[in-house]
Length: 252
Length: 252
DNA sequence: CACATCCGGAACGTATACAATAGGTAGCCA
DNA sequence: TGGCTACCTATTGTATACGTTCCGGATGTG
Image 1: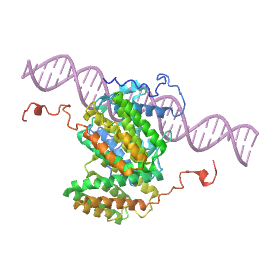
Image 2 (image 1 turned 120 degrees about the horizontal axis):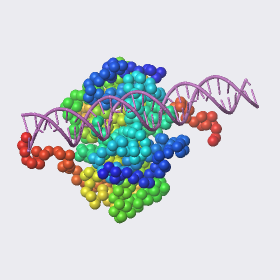
Image 3 (image 1 turned 180 degrees about the vertical axis):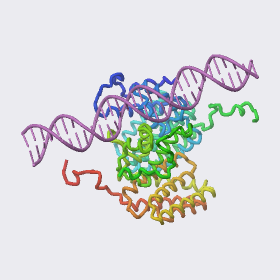
Image 4 (image 1 turned 90 degrees about the vertical axis):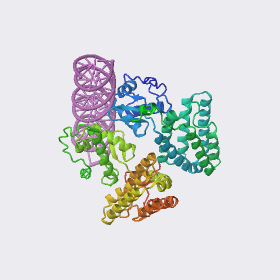
């Protein structure tokens, strides 16, 4: 089970892991960890690593050809971004967002993403519009081909890119984290088959921004996020052995 | 210079650092790192560690009686919260926020803290009011006694606590980080003697929230943050050799 | 037959050792 | 005497080794 993600295929780790050999002499070590980070992060966002899955340090170290030291660094970063949960003596596992967390994340997105739309409408350039249309197109295609994983990642990337338009790096990074966590929330509370974002919402957003309609874009984003949230079934999961007493009607 | 913070006095590290001795056997290791984290974080927020100061791993390891491993963990966390900057082969130093970062942080605070006020007004309890009044009082006293360091920390804690009232942990944590970074910004761009928050702004805020006037509280918070930002001199510092070319009018 | 206890393995937490690099200093040559 | 080079030290990056804890099964007993 935990091996299912063990093929990072295209993530540019395609050096010989056995003989690192000072391949480039500079930017080597630092970039390697960053690559590992992105590999795991992507795997989580694309639901190749599902919430609750344990991430053993030894296994990751072996797969990526580094020692546990580097893995721990990466896991700690992922933990601070709430993508993985670090339980003191139990190790790391993909975060399983609680109902409250899910609510908080969407409330935060509502506040921040909507709040950024007006600045985005003011600052958007023709090149941005083109790039965004491209992303939206790729997402539509992925949806058509039933490639949910790709579509989910595209969607998160789209929202992140949108936030970057505002020019506020601090808020854009925050939105990026919220989108990643949203992907986790989708994995737990989403109804399979219905992937959060409606196919044409993103296109509509682009048009509003391109037209400089900041206020309308903000309102549209608000409805967009609401509809995503509404498409979820945010109820406590039965899993994790919550209350056998309750299930069998035993009064304690 | 880098020794000036070497006395964490009250931070509950008052064990014998020489003989840790399995003091409690459980919850020991994890809490120790957290204590170190808080010590450094506090020192940065209170300006005992000024922006630009280098933080050598060996020195920190010796002071806190742990090995570099633990220190690196703490430094990485601080780096992700933007309180320290990790330069690849140069080590860690207290972050010196750029002009753009300062602008971004205050824009973010404006958006999020204001946005949280209405929820805070709805959810605030009598106990909260009491606790907030207490914090505001301590801040006033610190200001009266010219204890800028204490006052700065109180102010950041107050804003953080306010955000917690909303019940949204994700956003509250974010506000906490923004407040910490604001403290750094104050250290770089603040005018000495004039400490960000006006003495009675916080009291006014409490009263508005206690009266359930969410909208007024939001507007007041907006003005409050604007006035803090306006009190700064956000211009490029001469220090840090930013652009010698520019200074000496050399065209590249 | 069921429950409690004990033991073994597996995984994480911490420290230490080694390797690599950047910056400073001293020495050498023009 | 000035500038350049080569070493050398100080500091970080990485890996490994050891200690500790927790979960699992096996075993003995009521």
